[in-house]
Image 1 (cartoon, one colour):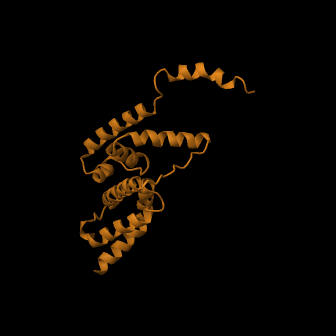
Image 2 (cartoon, helix red, strand yellow):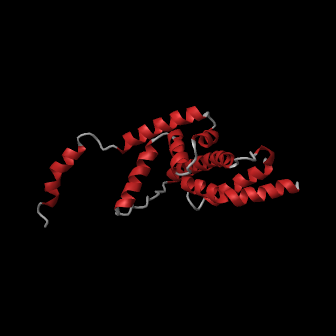
Image 3 (cartoon, rainbow, N blue to C red):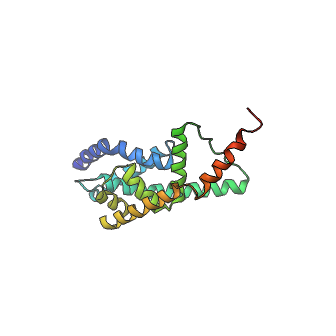
Amino acid sequence: MEDDRTRFVELFRRHYGAVMRYAARRVGRDRAPDVVSEAFLVAWRRMADVPADDPLPWLYATTRHLLGNEIRGRGRQARLAARMGEVVEMVAADHADVVVDQVRVRRALAELSEGDQEALRLAAWEGLDASAAATVMGCSRAAYKVRLYRARRRLAAALDPVPGREAADAALRPLAHEGGS
């Protein structure tokens, strides 16, 4: 029991920050602490199942499952709010170029399937290598690499402007300046 306690304390000390960032990027900073607490509770209860050599992918996979529960719960709340006639107002994006780019990427990412989003996030946000990401997603390394390749292609397509739109925008630009200044 004491060995498990010592191992858990070290596990928590070394990986809490990474798991918190992982959760916060998916459910926000307000809900992340609850999800992370649940993840470490699962780790404590299943300490024998936590890999000793590289526990972070296991923690990410556990957190991912808990996040699924959280996201499904949010969906239920949203449906309930819609039935009650409440309108949730979206936060307006800042007009700074960086924020606009972030919003553009997040929107393109939101158009992708959950599996594509997760493959991209594990590589780009979590910095996991293919083996660790495959463990989190519950597939082989080769399958993860194929998923990541396809997800990157789909994200690039979602980020591409609509064909012919640049020409239409250029044609309308002079009209935007007429009559005002």
